[in-house]
Image (tube, rainbow, N blue to C red; front, side):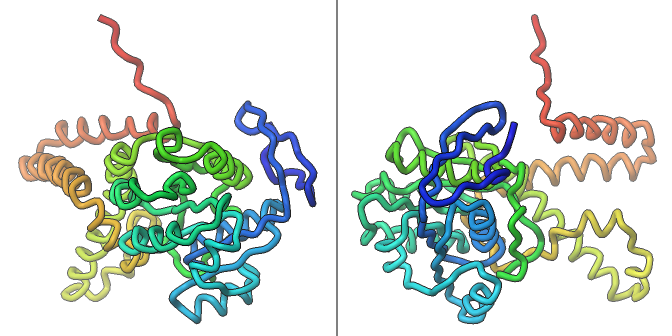
Length: 320
């Protein structure tokens, strides 16, 4: 079907849009969007929603004055407001900052939020953030989200309007704790960005992303470190690096300032995933040491089944 944004309408018209086989009505008012954190994710949200006409007026805040200046130059935001003023003046407020700072900023925003304003955080961890505001009197105006999208680059110059096209977005505790109007506005916003919506609990989210996102970043960072240490004695090693190495180590170029808090916030799940990964690596090493080619062949053949996962299929349940 057609995606939101294929034919954008202006003013207060209503466009009937089909997405992933389902119809929904999307109103496109003169929305005032707020962004706290105008880097890759926050900046791309703004550019995407401006491109499709969902947001016409975007204000923002960032701790980095250089980022704010660049965000204005690129049209990511039109003006700068404090987080408190964003909470009072915007229709929707996006928080896209390191996860260790998100809970405090979220509480401060909910303390002064105007009626009807919806605040959405886009952090890569959810359980601690959701717990921090579960008793807040304005909790119902908050929607917990995590778009599964990104690149190894950071900052406003890394933002682009198609980052989220066709990607999944996870929403947590919408039925349990978010008001219906807040959930609807968040869903409309993410569908306008051409995302596919997935619903789960914060606990499920943090466990699952430890395996499908956080572990791959740890692996890439440590592969990069392993080869860098090797380079100290073998200075020409990078002359041999090809596309396979580059694609595997690409995530090691990601922002440490963003990822260190993520690993810390989700430490229990990341440690569990990392422990299992290390066990698999040890088994593979043992078979290499034993010159067990049939064994390594078997392990790699088993691992090839990841194609099924990436294709989005499900293993058929065995019938007894």
